[in-house]
Image (cartoon, rainbow, N blue to C red):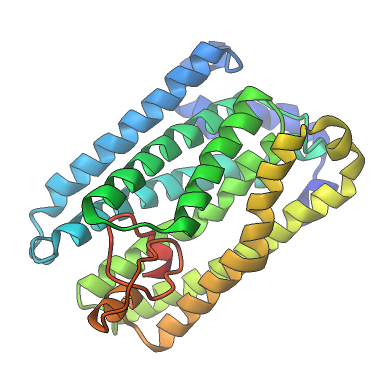
Length: 310
């Protein structure tokens, strides 16, 4: 994980214009990514695309017998899994670019920004607008509430929008931190295979093993973010507003010392006992719902559940 310390910074200008976003949408090269109007438009487009993906996944999945056999809550959860998988895959590409090809953001973890980091941050905000809206609606409709997931999603939304878009700082943490979503597609596949009665297949076992390793990688990334904070502590203290500091490190520390280790434990135990923890607990009649990543095993599959713990 020391790629930034030794990566030849003279390569940065060469690769900066080759970012996947700019290759896919060349017109973005002429856009003022720092403009408020641009941020709002990109975020709105990201929300719209996310909603369209959700609706499309429902229409396509309805042709599958296993999908039609699910309860209403599980159908919504299935579609949300597709949306989150797509988002996780896209973020691995956009964020991974800075991990491997362009060390710009690591040069100053507080003040360094790029055109594509502004665009990526706007996409992240747009996605989490959809997420918190879906969470609120599902909580009302299905009478569920999970404080941990509620706090997690709102911290992501408020933290990224405040830090990366309003104050225009901390892009290192916002953009590279979203690399943690690399586990999401495989978590979604885990849950879908469970519901498809394929929990004992080689595909499910291989996916689960890979997922467990990715959770360990999350811990490494989170630790690296804290290490970079330590190395550039003077810049953090001098340039980061208190409100941003609190939002950022509440999230990072929460992930590092509690959520990721817990989710890792749950996915490891699930490898040896391939069950849907949420449904299993529901059958026992337990009260309360945890529909977040790494379910605590409390009541049923809710549509706002995050598949990391299913």
